[in-house]
Length: 173
Image 1 (cartoon, rainbow, N blue to C red):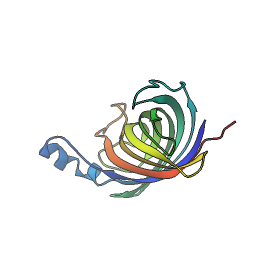
Image 2: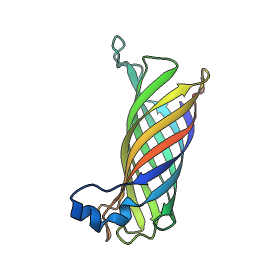
Image 3: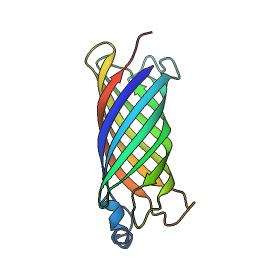
């Protein structure tokens, strides 16, 4: 089991043709502060015991509180799930990769992305840096995409590179 609280900063970016990037420049200017409480449970025992990629699968439930500071202030709140693979080759540093899917109620007041119901998806990589047998400093770099999947207009999507830092606790019950 894992209990964690992470906070971080997201930096918006655009990709695609130069014309598309120019059209949606507002979305590339997004700057997001996030707070993510999470609880996780191991879904498997260690896999691939005799290899460098020995690890386990973990399932996490996350909350999401977002505050947008640029180009216009706003906020969002929601929740989601994350599927993670932890690499267990070391007891002190446990790197991982993950993918997440969630929903948020967006209120960013942007011209090119509708407020209200939106999906929040992404993937990332990170590591737990254990400072004791049950407590770790956790770092993560995540690509985040917020979009309403054409349920309302406009829907140009927000992309952000998100850096998270926090504390994770792994109780030994």
